[in-house]
Each structure stands twice: as structure tokens, then as C-alpha cells.
Amino acid sequence: MGVIEVEQDGQKYSAEFVLEENVITVLGDSGQESTQLGGMSEEATAHTLLRTLIRKGNIEPIATE
Image (cartoon, rainbow, N blue to C red; front, side, top):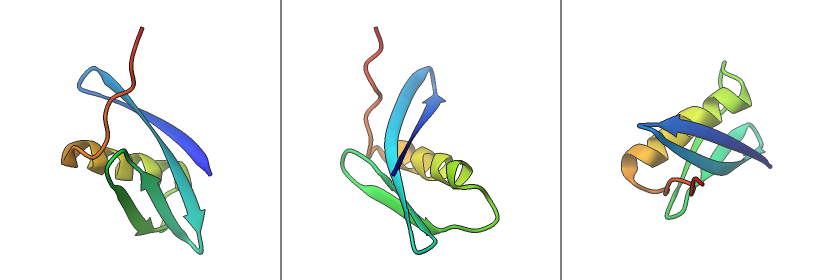
């Protein structure tokens, strides 16, 4: 399991991701996104999936101080 962060529209988002049997899954607050790992790295694929969760509203930004 790993953790990734993305900054989008001035807000930071963080999510855990797992890789099992060549399928990567990013876990959001109210949903998840999965895809088969292709030519991109685990982290690059996880970032793409996290941006999908953000677009769908399935993850909240992390609190900033």
C-alpha cells in the first residue's frame, strides 16, 4: 500500500493506493477507482486515478494549516 498526494485548484488531496495482481486501486472517501497497470508507473497511474476521484467528488481535500 502506498500514499499519493495531488494539488488541484489550490487544494491538496491525499489517498492510499494498492496494487494487486497488476490492478491498481486508489481509495477515496466515498468511492474508489481501479485500472490495470499499463505502461505508466504505479505512482503516475495512481495520480491519474486520484484526479478522477477528485473530478467525481469522491474525495475531500486534506485540511491545511
